[in-house]
Length: 303
Image (tube, rainbow, N blue to C red; front, side):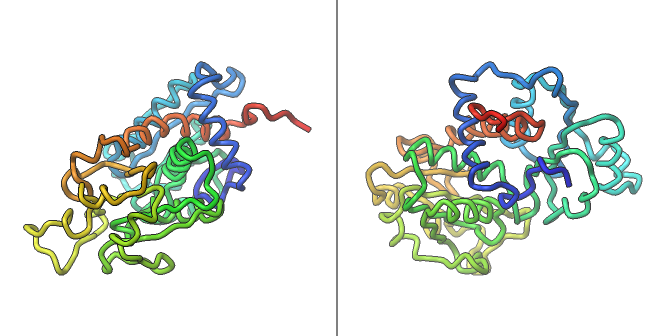
C-alpha cells in the first residue's frame, strides 16, 4: 500500500494528525488560496459505492479548490456490472494515469485486497469500521472549540454498534487523552465500547456526538415498533440539552434525522456545531489530499 494512503486512523501518528489539523486551519485563513503545485497535480477519482452527500461533495470541493482534475466513478455504468472486481477496477484507474483514489464501500476493510496498489487511497468510509476523514473533521471541530483534547469529556450516543464514526473517534480521542463515553440502546452496545447512562452523562460531557441509526446496516430495535419515539427514549431532546454544561457543544456526523436522534430545534441551536463540522470537512479533506500528493505540512521544512 502507498505510504501516503489514509485508510484508518492508525495510519497516522499523533504528529501527523496535528499536521493535518494545522493545515486544515491554515486553509481557512492564511493559505485559503493555496493549490497543489502544478508539478505534483494528479488526476483523482472518487469511487463511492454507497450514497453520500457531505463526504462525497466535500472531497469534490476540496479537489477543485486545490486545482485538481477529478472524476466521479459510477458503479452502475462500469465493468463491475460485468463481474470485474474492485481490485481490477482500482488497478485500471492506476494504469490509466490516476494518481489518487477516494473510495467509500459498504464492505469492512475493503482496502485489504488493494495492498499491491501503487497509488495513494483515501478511505471515505468502510462498512462499520473506519471513517478517518470524518474523525479528523470532528477533531478539528473540537480543537477549534476548546484548543486541546487532553481531559475533555466526549459522549457518543446512539447506534454505536454499526457506526464507523464511533470507531474512528474512539481511537483518535483516546490517543490524545480525551475521556470518551458511549450511550444508547443496549442492543447497540459494541465490544470495547461500554455504555454509560445517557442522562447521567449529559452534564459530564464537553461534546455530545449524536449518531444516526444505520438502518442500511441492519440496525433495528426489537423492543420498539415504528410508532415508538426513539427521540424520547434515546435521542437528544430539548430537555436533555438543557442539562448540558455551559460551553458544551452538540455534534452529529450527519445526515441528521431531525426529530429522531435529535430534536429538530437543536440542529441549529447555539450549542450546535453540526454545520460547522460540514465546513470543516472541506478543510480537512484538502489537508489529507495535500498530504497524499506529497506536499509538506505548512511551516515544516526538510531537515
